[in-house]
Length: 402
Ligand SMILES: Cc1cc2nc3c(=O)[nH]c(=O)nc-3n(C[C@H](O)[C@H](O)[C@H](O)COP(=O)(O)OP(=O)(O)OC[C@H]3O[C@@H](n4cnc5c(N)ncnc54)[C@H](O)[C@@H]3O)c2cc1C
Image 1 (cartoon, rainbow, N blue to C red):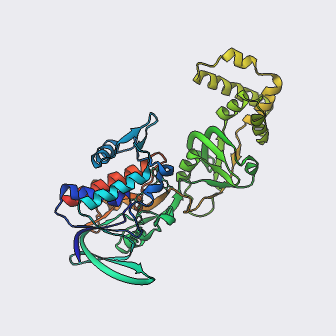
Image 2: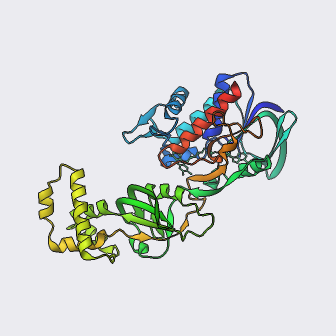
Image 3: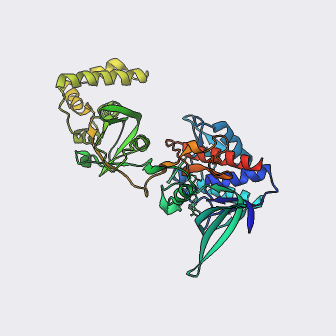
């Protein structure tokens, strides 16, 4: 069977490419091949099931918004820029996409795992396997254009096992070695095992060979094995080392705000326990005192409703000593970034410079498009990665329809 377009992968990027091509050129016959039994398996898990669908600060946000609303997805836009479907249900979004694909005549092949992609005289030959009652059968379809939308390697349980890298390489493309990102970090035993289960607001910074290469404020979660939380997830995008050795990295935490909060609740038993758990630094007491005062001043300045004088007056020497001893930002040596199973995204992938930025079409293999997480793009948490999937899928779909 020959199609105008074959899309490998019914994730956000592939579904978008198919829908956008058919919106502009309804006469095209489009095949989407998906190894799972349903469309958008990973999409259903996004945003803890709520689907952080885009972000007002993401490149291409306006276009993504028009696309999503045109499909019928009402959006809920929060002040912090995070955007969700109004229902806050990722499953609703995935089902809507599947419905729209059926309505506009996309031919959907589920439970079909592509194992080979080749160029031929009329475009591309795609070989896929299906398994029925334990019997595996192989089929070949042909297509004039090919959209590779099979994702990266993060979350292999969702079907993304890095299959597209091999095909891209075989067709002559460069692949930047993929690493798991947006996940938690394991640290060398250095006190963090005592902190497991605690959370604190603060700033996490990443240092490489003594130079600060990343910093972000947020909620830091201490786990039995290390550090987690959105700001820690985002930090992992900067932890590419070229090997398993992460000894060139150091993670520092600036917990002023968290400590001050703990200080304010110091009389509460739980908070006292939490503060006492932190390891003391070796910095001179006088420095710690001044650091603490600075932190308090910063805290007060940021929150005009707090009575500065009252706050300072409440600081007994004993309390000050106690909190000061904890304010010294702890530092950690990462031993590993959690693997593919836990990662929300892949950093690395098919090198973008070999693709036309406006259309996502290969400069080496005309008629082949690479969209979504398979490409060497990764964004931070907050809807950026889905935005890239929508935008790259739209670019390819439009270019194909023209
Ligand atoms: C738990 C979790 C939560 C996340 N939350 C968010 C969030 O809230 N906001 C956000 O922006 N991003 C989030 N992400 C990231 C986001 O899900 C991805 O960036 C996005 O799904 C990538 O879309 P894609 O279409 O490129 O690939 P995918 O969604 O990975 O889809 C690729 C599809 O291709 C199929 N496939 C692969 N190989 C083959 C093959 N050989 N044959 C046939 N089919 C194949 C796969 O089964 C899969 O369905 C999250 C990720 C995870 C894991």
